Amino acid sequence: METRKNAPIGRPRGFDVEEALERAMLVFWEHGYEGASLSGLTEAMGISTTSMYAAFGNKEELFRKALERYTEGPGAYLTRALEEPTALGAATAILAGTVRTTTRPARPHGCLGVQGALAASDSGRGVRDLLAAWRNNGCSSVRARFQRAVDDGELPPETDPGLLARYVTTLAFGIAVQAASGVGRDELQGMADAALRNWPLS
Image (cartoon, rainbow, N blue to C red):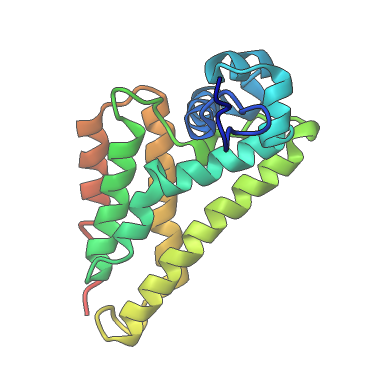
């Protein structure tokens, strides 16, 4: 009998890492960091606790990877919004993206980056700090976009880009909290539209 050459050596991992991470992201998104138990995570991921630790590290590392996936996936509307040709267009796209992402029927409502560790105890301080930095990084990106609009003369020279960025991101975070509380998409979009009616014009 002929022996097959170049057969794979070693034991295959046995599960799709990307699919498992996607499922973990959804669990964290729905339940938050502390609300997501290890048993709940591994059951959703379809793997054993041993496999989870081997592939992703501890629970906090798994959460960090899930947050990266959220940022590059459901949360990617922020990056796209900042590419809008006007500051108002960017603000409008940020709020519309927040409404859309936090109220999607097949996904958990709310925002992983807003609610992920709001109720975390001292043991979850690392995740709390991670999410605070995540939110601040988002605000800084929006501020830089609005600063460019001031420099280009699109926004009045007296506009405070930092304050305006904080205003828009606070609205976005508030929308996420309201969405998690069950407020509907149309109502949230109406609130977003009303909030931008007094946008500063040059």
